[in-house]
Length: 88
Image (spheres, one colour):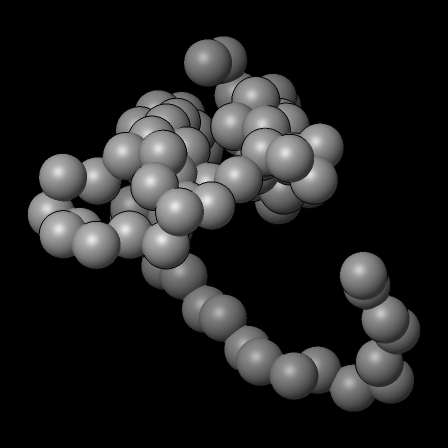
């Protein structure tokens, strides 16, 4: 759940050539990371049963939803900065 706060909790600064400014690359990387998060990890020898196959989607959250929210979050500053929308 989101809550409103009256002050900044953190500041983030990115230069114009920062990798975080490359929305298309960020989205491509996020797709890989989110897919990994929703799948089994062979490096974990004794995973908790509910997470043995990655993130639990029983609460209604899916990898597709996570990627959609990330794309929205990632595109907002890109569009706000005048770059237009990203093209996945």
